[in-house]
Amino acid sequence: MSDAHTAVRDGAPGLPAGATAPPHRLDDVRGWFPVLDQVLFAWLLDRQEAGGARGDLLEVGVYLGKSAIFLGRHLRPGERYTVCDLFEGDAPDDANRAESTKSYATLTRRAFETNYLAFHDELPRVLQGPSSLVPGEVPPGSCRFVHIDASHLYEHVHGDIGAARDALLPDGIVVLDDFRSEHTPGVSVAVWEAVLNRGLRPICLSTQKLYGTWGDPGPVQEDLLAMVRGRDDCHLSVQQAAGHRIIRLKAKREMRAPAFPLSRYGREAREAREDVPAEPTPLPHQPVPAPPAPAAKASPPRRPRSRARRVVIDLLPPLVTRALVKARTACRPTAR
Image (cartoon, rainbow, N blue to C red; front, side, top):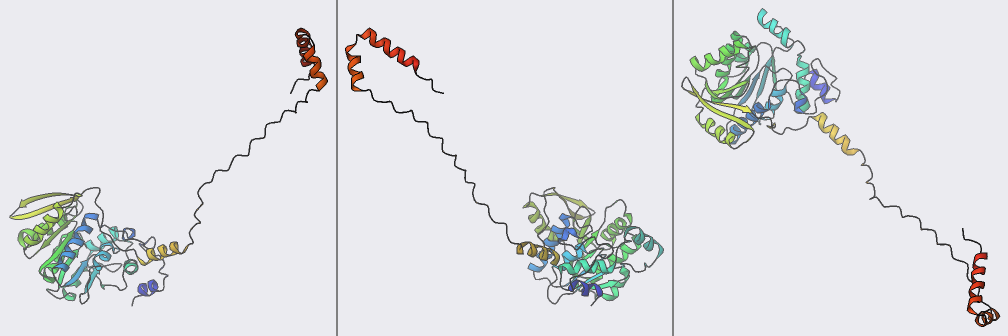
């Protein structure tokens, strides 16, 4: 068991070179694994498994583990998963050494293992060294799926393609990265040379990867066309080149990656959030009743007229009576 494995099991892996924080989701792992390729990996691997195909998995060139983590989820009991990378090891030649220094200076094996073990209980079999180790370590005809994403130099890619051909089962699938990037002409030359002269038969092309087989691509292409035509998030075209049918795919903006479980860090964070007592639900707003309006001030009771006064008023002439009433009213205090 490696130091990285022990550290992760103890829950204190630290931050190895090349890692910025413990990954909670697959997207937190640095690397190049576009959504369309995640969809294609998942579909091809699921198709193999549904069809009863058995065989090992191989990835050559893992960087910090993004695609390796994804691929490892499809490892089934009795199968073996091997990954190969230089990590911080010595390159086999000056050109490869310059390439590694320029593009992968921060890559370490511990960073890869820490990321991988955040999502899986066990590491794959790790070959640390040049991809030329693969033919001597992976038995011929043992693999159902091989992903090549290592050196961009023609000589190395040529050898990696040969190693993949030897390692694959008759209907196994190889995925070759960077077959069309302007900064990787060596990969382009080696890939199309394999199509033209070494029996590799294309299945489909994504933006960055060529998917192929040394078996019959027809059945998987028909199933792939049916799958893609049932989606509305992927551009599709079918072309012919040098006697090969080539399916070209490009993701639309709305394409979403397949669901992938949280890492153990993500699960711990979610569980911690669920343990926090919920804030009490506020009661519905109750309007404060308005204070009662002050009671109207009662007018002072009118004093009843005396009997004698009533008699006098009744006996006086009306003109005199009206004058007396008017004078009395004028003498009353005005209400304020």
